[in-house]
Amino acid sequence: MSKSMIYSKKGAFLIENVPVKKLADEYGTPAYVYSKKIIEDTFINFKKSFIKLNPLVCFAVKANSNIAILNLLAKQGAGFDIVSGGELKRVIAAKGDPKKLVFSGIGKSIEEIGLAISHDILAFNVESEGELYRIQSIAKSLNKKAAISIRVNPNVDAKTHPYISTGLKDNKFGVDEKKSIELYLLAKNLDSIVIKGIDCHIGSQITEINPFIDSAKKLVALIDHLKTLDINIEHFDIGGGLGINYKDELPPSFSDYADAINQVIGNRKLKIIVEPGRSLIAKAGVLLTSIEYIKEGNSKNFAIVDAAMNDLMRPSLYDAYHEIINIISHNLDKKEYDIVGPVCETGDFFGKNRLLSIKNKDLLAILDTGAYGMSMSSNYNTRPRSVEILVDNEKSHIIRERETFEHLISGESILP
Ligand code: LLP
Image 1 (cartoon, rainbow, N blue to C red):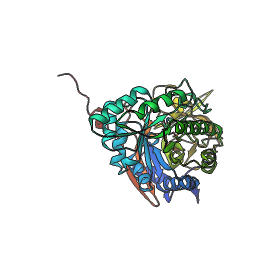
Image 2 (image 1 turned 180 degrees about the vertical axis):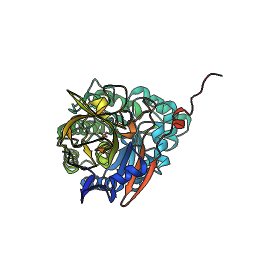
Image 3 (image 1 turned 90 degrees about the vertical axis):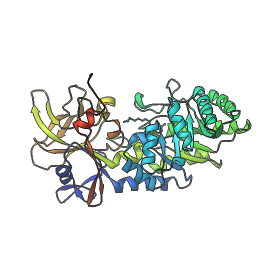
Image 4 (image 1 turned 60 degrees about the vertical axis):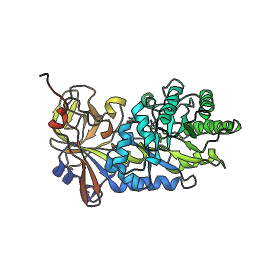
């Protein structure tokens, strides 16, 4: 079972020093709830584990883009990995430092590139030749220089869900090693481009150390080779991807991961950038949801809850496992239930055949949903997005209001 940010004390479940039941009573459900202390402690632990390499930790904004959370991380010294102009604007709204931004993604638009150049970001992680030329031409027109890394696709199997594996030669990301050398040689002669680094990111929810080692080895070999071509790489962006324990996975610890990378780097003088998302934030968030109906049948029992796949897509999309616990204790016999949402799709479920002691109106917590939970939510079935709450010791704060119907249709209109 995964270790949770919710703990029980004298028969009540707490997040930091606030009873979970009280949060649900105050803010309603569904509700995403985060712990400030866990966010900060996790970031500090990550930094500590990496003390020898002293990297710039660029939190992957896509994992959780609430500006209150980005602000907490920025205050701890985090930089950010962004993949859109929208994420760039979020970082700025969160008082993050644009000079600590790396910009990844294969489809950067003209506007996004212009915006990033005008904010003097740390580096573009360039994913194609076309993008390199586009950055050169926009930088030139703005009379600026743009700093770049080439994203190398090392053809390493991250051994994760195929939808979130990004470092195989048939994936759409980055360029292969040979092409990267061509692009560096090209970039060297582009007058508005400054070569800063090299980058890779092989996938997400990676639970073995070897894919990280294999790809880092390939990249340092490339860095050494580029040196012989008079191309000097200042920073090595190792990407993100470190997995967490949702059920029974045993991912490398922060220290295992840091030590492995440190060994590959050896005594090379390289500034390290790392882009963790999930491993920093997944365990700092839960989704609270109330049971609307219990529906017992001959072959299946269902607990129908007030959250749905629009609030948390991971089970529907990847068949992902999230631990589900009942916050209300009683002595009913445990039975197997499928925990499902109200959306009109069979794929709208949070857990299958879960052994639980539950009854109508109980309050459930879906654990480890701080990463890729709210950030992937939608309004499917015209369902307003959930409220987001940040707990700080014995206080709680709304960091995003629950959407209303008016939010949902604002911007829509009927023909005159
Ligand atoms: N850097 C780049 C370029 C990325 O594309 C990603 C994630 C990260 C860093 C952060 O990876 P992390 O440390 O969080 O694994 N929606 C999926 C995960 C998609 C990950 C996409 N890229 C999920 O819910 O499992």
